Amino acid sequence: MRPEFLNHGGTVFGGYLMQWADDLAYIAASLAYPEALFVTKLFGQFDFKAPARAGDIVRLLAQVESTGTTSCRIGVWAVNARTSIEVFRTFAVMVNVVDGRKTPLPAPVGR
View 1 (cartoon, rainbow, N blue to C red):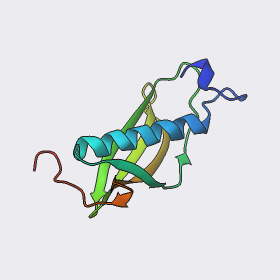
View 2 (view 1 turned 90 degrees about the horizontal axis):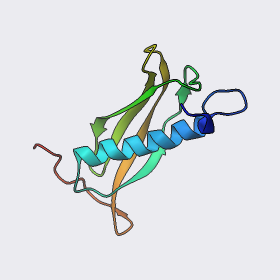
View 3 (view 1 turned 45 degrees about the horizontal axis):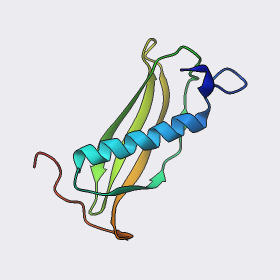
View 4 (view 1 turned 45 degrees about the vertical axis):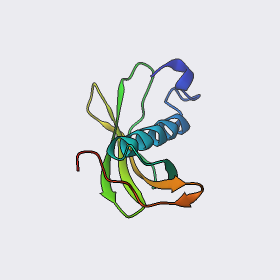
C-alpha cells in the first residue's frame, strides 16, 4: 500500500478498498459474462477484519458465487499477501442493464 492511500492512523482508507472491490466485482462478472453490460446494484456489508498499512501487499480476489436471471452475486475479499491475514470480505450484486432496463444475462463463457 502506498502512502497516498493511508488515513491519519497509518492504515488504508476503507473507501479505497471499497472502490477496488467494486472494480473487481465488475471485472469478475464481465469475465464470466463478456456480452453483458453490468452495473453495481448493491454491496453487502464490508467486514473489515485487519488493517492494511504502508508497504503491505494486498491481494484482492473476486469470484462469481451465484447467478440469477439478470444478475450475479460476486464474492470479493482481500488478503495480506505476506501474512495471509484476511483484510476484508464482502459481496456485490451486478446487474445486466441494457438501455436502462434489467436484461437477462447472456450465456456465460465456456457454455
